[in-house]
Each structure stands twice: as structure tokens, then as C-alpha cells.
Image (cartoon, rainbow, N blue to C red):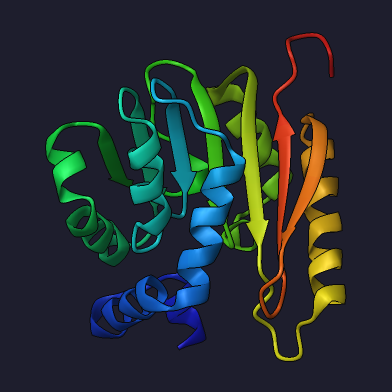
Amino acid sequence: MVRQFHHPRGLPGRFVGWFMAHRGSNRQRNVWAVSLLDVEPAERVLEIGFGPGIAIAELARRATEGHVYGIDHSQVMVAQAGRRNADAVRARRVHLVHASVDRLPDFGEPLDAVLAVNSLGFWPDPVARLREVRGVLRPGGRIALVSQPRCPGADRGTTDRAAEELRDLLTRAGFADLRTEMLGLDPPVACVLAVNPASGTD
């Protein structure tokens, strides 16, 4: 079942997606994370590892004149998120792709913001992947990395350590202006936000 949360597949994967979509803390965490990105109506935003599409829906609610992109390596999650965001997909405001973070699709133009919620721990070579994400962000574009540890006994200390790891990875990847926000769930949620600096500043 743990593997299903990493890569939902088949009938068990559909159950995992349903569980993630309906768990109150998951919904609260995703809506909170999106709020921290301050998405403007005309912006182009990407979520990496969108799961059942809760944050995608919230991003689409804010980027009413822009575009919301999502990639996920699970076909089951692409299907669930597509159904949850069917109207926005039909209107071509939301674009969901079955893809891995190490094979980013072409987004055409630079993005304004990127979100990843509880997915970075599964990325191969996360510093290299974050550098590639910087490559698709405009100068001054924002990124939000969210972690709510799910290991047994996780507490505020576990979340603090997770936040420090996220800060370290972002710094090594060349991001700047880092700040950390906390959401008081059990265990707490950390969101580390950063900016893609202008060329030549890193």
C-alpha cells in the first residue's frame, strides 16, 4: 500500500486517489499551499505530482485567464484529476500530462510558478531536477515545495528537518529569497518558497 501512495496503479491506486482527495488534512494542506503562491489570474502555473487534482482545482480557480499545467507519473491520478477538473480541461485552461519530473514536457513559454506537494522525496536526483525546473521558470518566477512527513511518530521536529532539507536543495539548485511557512496540522506542514533569480545572479 505504501508503494501505491508513491505510484498509484490499478484498483488499489484508485482507492488511494479517493482517500487522498477526501482526507480533510490533505485538502487543507493543498489549498493552503496554493494560497502561498499568490497566483494571479493571467499566470502560467505547473504542479508536479498533482495526485487526485485538489491543488490543480484551486490553481485553476485563481488562474482564470492563464493556464494550469500538471504532470504526474501515475495514469490513475491523471484520470482522477482529469475528472475532478473536467470543465477546466475542456476549456483548455488545465492541461494534465502523464509524465515524470525527469522528463519535463515542453510548456511553450516560461512559467510563473511551480508547486510540488509531498512529491520531491520521490524525485531522482532532486537538485538536478530543481535546476531543470528553474529552466522552465521565468526570472522572478516562484516555486513552493511542501512537505508533511507521514512517517510513524512524525512531529514538529520531523517537519523542521524536512523544511531544512528542502531549503538546502533549493539553495543548491540556485533558487533565492527562501522563506518557510508552517501549517499547524498533525504533524505540521512546511512550505518552502523561493524565487528563480535573474540570469547571472546565482
